[in-house]
Length: 241
Figure 1 (cartoon, rainbow, N blue to C red):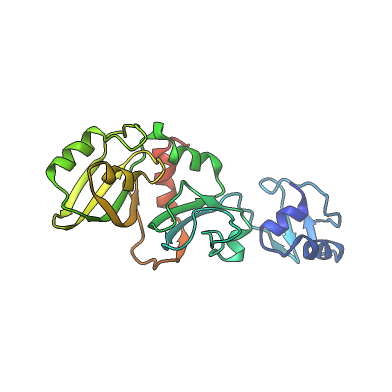
Figure 2: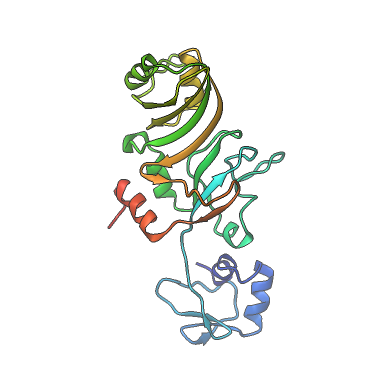
């Protein structure tokens, strides 16, 4: 990795600011001064310091966001606010991206990372990582719906979903439910209920596998995953050493 990219990614300024830092002689690699921004270093093996302080290298970032219902699960958009736009600059420099997606009007648990391998495995249908949603439904959800969902329902395009676990929390003209699915088709939760003649009026993802949304996170707030949470995700995706 080029030294200017490393320092910029670790928050030492823009590429232009980093070049000035290098020219000033404040950067050393294995205690040798480095002034060329094109110098290649291995931050996992070589000791890099800036003004005498060790650069703590991080390759990956893992974030849990409580996504608001008015931002896109995307890295950029010319018109709408994205989940990346609401991150702090020191986290944006790692160039994270959302793991899967939530519809713009859907709230709740969204993971962001720059670890492509983990993201791919978490969203792969082959891994059967469950995603659990809380939803408010316009219409009375019945035990017949529970049985239908457990077998898989046919969507409007003819696709039959994988079996899903539907739990009725409140059954009335405005029902409340939890639904766990292991795939992520476009608007899947909404389309599953449409298939049984009902309409989703509110949707929030509350869990991925057994990783719950941190209830202390307000809408739009995020934090880094704990070591225990990350270890769990690596374990269920078979990425743990």
